[in-house]
Image (tube, rainbow, N blue to C red):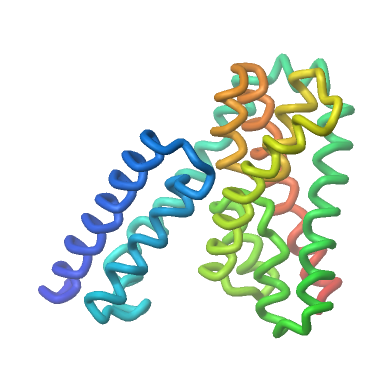
Length: 232
């Protein structure tokens, strides 16, 4: 049976987290700047509140553990976009497959190489590797590889927000005329934040970005045991 203290933590920090997200959405709707993206601003607001109340991470995660548990059903729900976009997959599956394979390999390899070059601890190197995969997949991959899933979630958020901002700049520099190329750029490079930005550009770009994000996540989850064996 949960104690009264646990119930209080759950009610308070769940409400606080959701409230911070609502505030972040309101700020973003007014300013429309990449640094006000809810994915980036919400954790900052939560951390500021936790520091003000002298609350440690252990107490916070005790109060919001149910949100982490909900990542499981979210992962299963990712199968829906694949079904809805089955016609798109049939038309472009060779390009999508090659793009996801190359993009995933490059993302994981460069993340590990940078962490290794900076002399980061092994656990942090591994935790950084799935940064270009959406959170439900990335935390599962990190756990399978021997990393720290909660730290991976932080890297995922930073990658998504910064990737979405850089993606806009890249569209102005690169001659990407097809919706397939533009959507894949955001879906592979910035996962959920990129999908949201791609939908603002166009419906087809958003659909492709979402599809690429899901395919990349599934591919990385399937490849995680192989990659883990190579690392260890």
